[in-house]
Image (cartoon, rainbow, N blue to C red; front, side):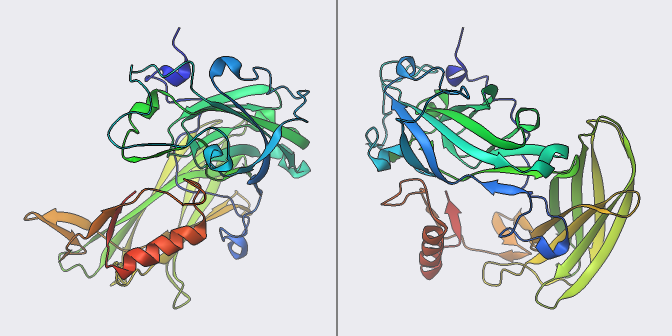
Length: 380
């Protein structure tokens, strides 16, 4: 039987469907990423053990009663090679191991075993609870309180799991088993340093049982690229054991620079069955909005409020939105009808001290450097 981390037909088990970055807020005043409600950031010290290959890994490390007292502590996010575990490998046009797709080496495929405790608040007992991994290279299994939750493969894409039925009020323990190589490594071969580990943030968050799961906003213009239509699709999901009726979804477009409301609209959701997800669609006319460009990156704010049948707030979300349309006409790339000259670069997420675990400060430094050289397109 093929193992999940060598099976190209499996990229995830019990993983949530992809969605935009949505962290729930109770009201508009707290709808800011810096102050999310019901979100626990798990970055920091984790218990850690590194094995040379899968056969040597501690196979029962996920158990609640497992003694990790003699294990090291490692900083998350990080690449374990940058902290003295294993060796960093650089390759250009060759693989870092003898290729035999989809199989990867058995004798040398380091496995990192991670354990982390967190405290779930008492008021999470009536919510849906998720754990979100921003980036893990290259494949991993997840357990919560000794129960296997799922599996994910894909080094540069987030992975999220619904852990509601595994979490208890008070202390909980996450166990994560990370494989350096997987069949996905064959897709990642390029000129770069090869690192492994949990190299981006991990957080646990709770949502209402009825929630906005996803949203997608885009726009179109008239022939003169003056007036616009804003389109918004919002996915609302019901996790309750019973159906729910007469929800209200309010949408506002706000100009934060002028502190004005451009438009405000709402729609009634007549009913959502248990475990059902529906899509609510908006189409709004916006007269002569300020356009987004690389030189003047004007952003508006979409505020989304979900209310129950009594008008009580269930959840609030916000989306930064720029009025921008990208087209190809007569072999030219146009942004809002204006042809642009692409001055692009290829960028690897790399820090000389931290490997692929990039800090916000380093990102800003890179962006400022690219802007200084008039770069307007980045492949990363």
